[in-house]
Image 1 (cartoon, one colour):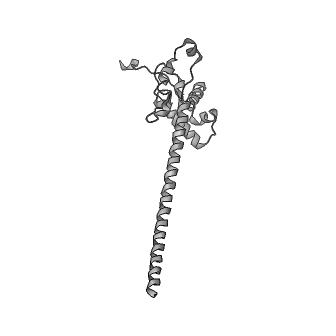
Image 2 (cartoon, rainbow, N blue to C red; image 1 turned 180 degrees about the vertical axis):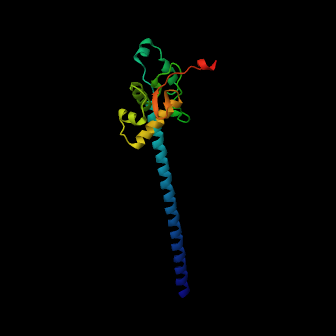
Image 3 (tube, rainbow, N blue to C red; image 1 turned 30 degrees about the horizontal axis):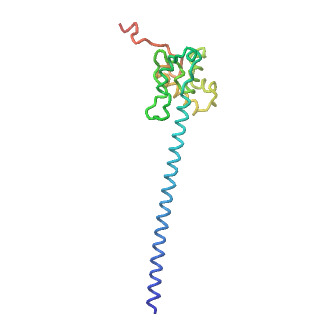
Length: 180
């Protein structure tokens, strides 16, 4: 009878080893599942955040345009940005300035920056703008604002004649008098 007990004991050991292997697989799959859930949640939050930002970009109609029944000049250009939350890939949140385009096509943060620069008596620095747009004067906020200022310069909304000093854009003509 000793061999029957030995056989049962061997089978029990084999079953225990198999249970431990399966438990290890379940733990590994649970870890992978948790990582996949975290990735899914980050993507959901990113999509919702982008949709909120793009929704804030929708320009308000001016009273004159509503009264006249015609869209404002800048609004015609802004219409390309309306409803962009559905196609967020490749969206240009700060469009290149064009004649007839008003600041209403810009996101709120950029409009606030333009307003502060326009109201300043002369060139302004990023660290001067930050408190005027309601942000704390912290390095990160200053650098973020400086990045926005540089983007506004690149797109023709502002000028930066002296490094770090920003002014409202002086609109340059395609053919300047010196190019003749």
